[in-house]
Length: 255
Image (cartoon, rainbow, N blue to C red; front, side, top):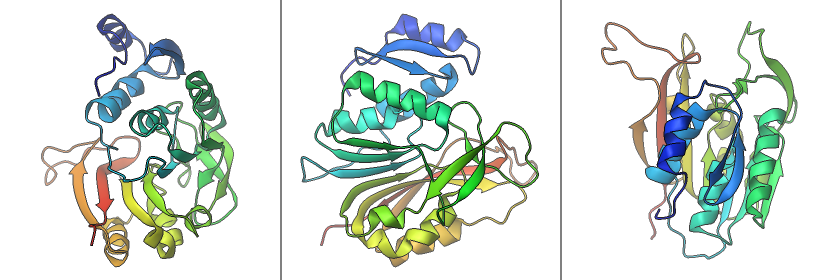
């Protein structure tokens, strides 16, 4: 993308800041607030540098569903490439959701529906680990600190009877359960991004996800992201409870 995001001097200052400290700055000439400079630098590079969510659509008004919208940088990116896109975005953490609302309101975007709920295999209330930035997730067994209550909805409800141009699922370990719940509606999705998370000491489910994609006519491309073990036969590194993270790009070839 050719537009300036934040200037070099601001970038250098961000790198010096302590983690999990609120920052206000200009982003595409609009004021945004973020809860953590470290995650902002990472997301800015992924979304606006590498453009990992870039996709092609013949429609000027593509329909996008963003599961795990965080503070809204993904929505800003989608609106930069498709200004008239219709977007539904989910973010369960109330504190992070407030940043999301502020940032989207700052840009004065139209046709974005923000929903303060998480995605799960059923509509319920769950304990949620509030990490304070982009790493919040449904709480795992015996986790006690930084927990909040969130409401959840099912993704199939939003996929049913809709043609979805782009579906993004970055929900920190809940992706397999959510995909199992909505798999019969993935026929309505053209492009699908999933960030796969493998919990240390838990059964891995990458094969489950890939089988769902194959059964629904997707081809896929996979790349490594996040925690990386240089010598996995000797030592598996972990981060935030995960021992592996992968970006999965699912797409359907035009016939």
